[in-house]
Structures are given as structure tokens and as C-alpha cells.
Image (cartoon, rainbow, N blue to C red; front, side, top):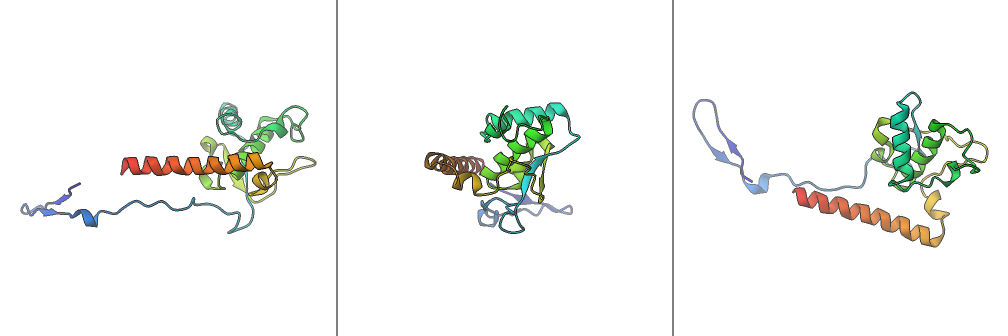
Length: 162
């Protein structure tokens, strides 16, 4: 990649050396507040488009692979049977299993982080580590390999665009 500098008075051309071009580096995900500033949860925002919220919930429980068993009929978090309540549980499940980063709690602008525990009655919202630590060994291995797979994809994509 070559970069040139020209002045307005005369054409003075300077070639920028490749050594001066900044290199993009990857760092751990930003926004992990579980260890820095106390536990956080990801919840659905009230007042957002119901269609957007439903689409985000469908994605979280589908392709996002959030644990949505508790919000199924008969589950401990089924009641109240509202879209905001179900989406909050699913969003938090995804957030807690995907690094507690700000980006893992976006859902197209339908979710936000909170420091207030949204658990109620028998419905317990997980925190970082509680999903994997209390899971059967097979699920623990799957969750860890999923994280490594996602990291590998990010590294491959970032190297491709460099």
C-alpha cells in the first residue's frame, strides 16, 4: 500500500513507508463488567417495536443458541407471558454465554445492560459462569468450543481484510 502527500504550492511527493502503517491488533472483548464493576444482566427494552423485539427473540433462541427452555410453557420463567419478559430472559442467556460484552447485548437496539438483578420467584437469570459452571460436562465443552470457534472466525476475517 502506498500513500503520497502533495502540497498546494508545488508537487512535493513523499512516499509513506510500509513500516509506518499502523497494524490492527485484536484485544479481549470490551465491556466485560462482570469482574470490573459488578455483575450485569442484559434485558429487553420496553417501548421498542414489538416486531423488532420478536425478531431478536427468535434469533436469540434460534441461531444465537440462547438457553430458552425456562421461557417455554410450564418453565419457571414462562410467566409473565409477555414478549418483553421472554426476550429479557433469552437476551441475558445469550449475553452471559458470549463474553458479557456490550455487543452481546445489543439485539438491534432492543436490549440494554442493567446492574439490577431481573430474577423473580423461581425464575433465576444467570450470571457469567453460572451457565457453563452448572452445565453438564458435555455442554461445558460445547460452550467452550463455541467461544473458540467464534474467536477463530474473527481472527480469520480480520486477517482476510488486512
